[in-house]
Amino acid sequence: MESIKLDISKALQFLDHGTLEAYAPQVAAAQEALENGTCQGNDFLGWLHLPSKITENFLAEIESVAQTLREKCEVVVVAGIGGSYLGARAVIEALENSFAWLVNDKKKPTILFAGNNIGEDYLYELTTYLKDKKFGVINISKSGTTTETALAFRLLKKQCEQQRGKEEAKEVIVAVTDATKGAARTAATQEGYKTFVIPDDIGGRFSVLTPVGLLPIAVAGFDIRQIVEGARVMEQETANTVPYAENIAARYAAVRQALYNQAGKKIEIIVNYQPKLHFMAEWWKQLYGESEGKDLKGIFPAACDFTTDLHSMGQWIQEGERSIFETVLSIEQPNHKLLFPHDEENLDGLNFLEGKRVDEVNKMAELGTLLAHVDGGVPNIRLNIPTLNEYYLGQIIYFFEKACGISGLIQAVNPFNQPGVEAYKKNMFALLNKPGYEEESKAIRKRL
Image (cartoon, rainbow, N blue to C red; front, top):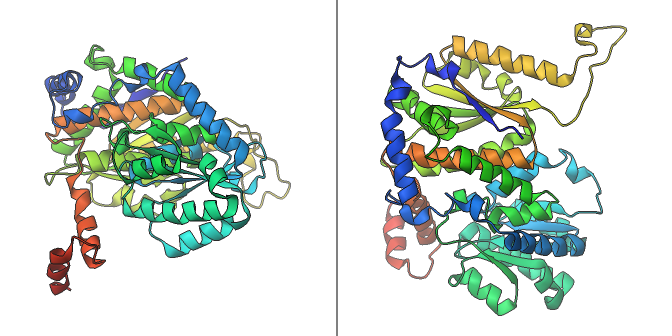
């Protein structure tokens, strides 16, 4: 099978000749530091060669537990936040029928998500919906104490036990957590839940190819073996032994850093023309925002769904401050075929499109937008994806992970930590008078 391809020609024209080649030594140093484990955050490099290390037994175990949930549940709720749910949701929504929530498919459960917000109305409506459903829960949390996820899981656990009984609930509640420590591990051991381990050396935003992502994806009915295979091939194609001119992860990392440092482009907008990729962009936003946004540095990651957002954000992108560049996820071949019909009255004036595929119209919108935005001063990077399936999603995931590690090291930050995420939590706990935060509570209330 062919692989995804990177086109940076419409970005290089915004850089001086030779700029990209000048980044080759920095890219090589970053790749070597990743490979040798000598970079900052080197205790979180488990994702680097994960695809090639995944075993048949591991995949079979994931599939077995997924099948149990599929057989015993009408609904499975994935409880997690950030990297503990975005990757799974990105893949599931990319592959699922866009109207799956309206389709009564008895062969597989409906997948819902919780633990990613503290919305009382959301949780009330979710628990109300589940009252007459045979549901199960995949609780994804390394610590078990992340507020959003722990709050949702407590509600879901109690409800599942009340509706199905404690013994049956044990069969449909699965914990994906730390191997030995943390509240979630303790609870899973005490309750007798089936568990999967989140490896210590893989951070949440790099965890799609662990049980964090693979279990929910398998429950949804998709081929996790093809996802892993796509990632494995991309691991090979972006290895540090691949020449710089042919390594798409290295080139992407270099061109975005060049646009940031040399061309003053501070915002990267990831764009899709396929609405199924909306949550892939959300996963990408966390991956790059949490990896690079530190030490008062970092490209701001944003996302747009085109052509939809051309009717809301298009004006700003075309003529606003020239601080942006675009990375377009371009799907070459859709999975379905739909032809534009003839209309006798032709009141909309669209009979000139008669007999054309809807995707041809979409492709011309994509091409027209590319030319307009480049003419308007917006560099364009394009990731060409042959079609939307498990294999290519695996490639996309690993491609962005590898490029993120290289890009962060070029930027001279630790791409694998997230110290800034803790600031709001400390304030929230102080405001809620959490035990152990008494002094913080006094101090913060003086500021209100």
